Image (cartoon, rainbow, N blue to C red):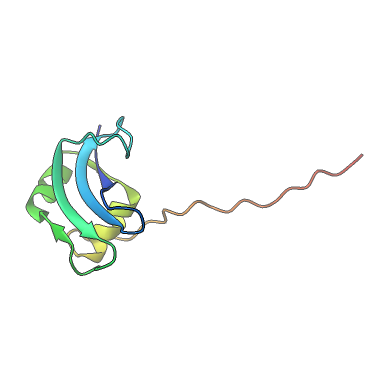
Length: 99
């Protein structure tokens, strides 16, 4: 299955990301991807360069978006919809009672 997700290419403490199309079996740090769909500098949030035509084309062909990319594309008004919660749910701490 193809996935559109972020790949970090910046140095330490300089977050710069590529928006890439990759196979979901490849890890995010493997460096393997099929196509670059854009770039995003996290320090300069307005400087996102996205190829919106290619992104919409791949999504229509069945490529899945990662949760963060989904929310990012909604912010940039490339796609419309509701944002999804990508943070893990907190679990209640269960203490064992001595019997």
